[in-house]
Amino acid sequence: MSKSRKSNGWLVISFAILFLTIAYMIVNPPTNQELLPRKIDPKVMKTIEQSTETEPASGAERYIGNPDAIAAGKAEYDAHCAACHLSDARGAIGPNLRKRLKFGSTPEKIYESIALGRPAGMPAFGKKLNDEKISKIIAFIESLR
Ligand code: HEC
Image 1: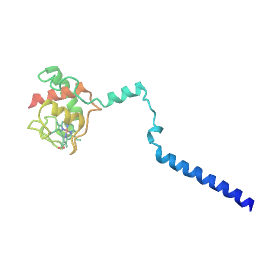
Image 2: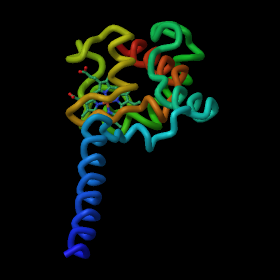
Image 3: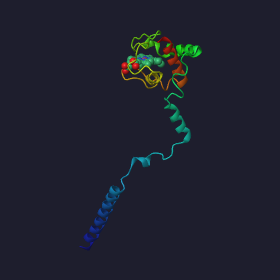
Image 4: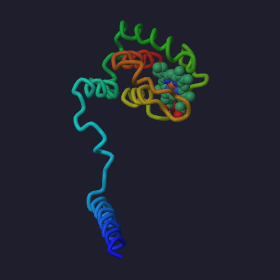
């Protein structure tokens, strides 16, 4: 008899511990954040920031009308864009870029189309081409329009 009372005592203690653990987890739910590093290495952070830099640094229109920039832009265009838009930009897989553009014809909107891509098959070039190259491509496209 005394033996079974003793084992009941352990049972009660086990349930009490179980209950307290559950109660603690309800009051203090574990969060995934505790598994993540709290502080990102500044060097890593800088790389992340650079890789997501798609905003025009200073005016997508700054090379328009500049002959050297247009020539450089044409070379980039031939390498990356002509396959879909043709080298004269009159369009094939991608639309004609000499006409009014669906997503906007201002240098800023064209920049957006190039850097971020567009849904129906226009790839995002924001990581492949830097701001300068994109702005020179815009100068080249504008020289045709
Ligand atoms: C793989 C084929 C492909 C390549 C490469 C490509 N494009 Fe496109 N592009 C497209 C397609 C398809 C669309 C239409 C997207 C849509 O309508 O959603 C498009 C859309 C665009 C638009 C927006 C047109 C509008 O009507 O608003 C611009 C600007 C543009 N491309 C410029 C470029 C430039 C500059 C390059 C080179 C850096 C380039 N594209 C490379 C296929 C391509």
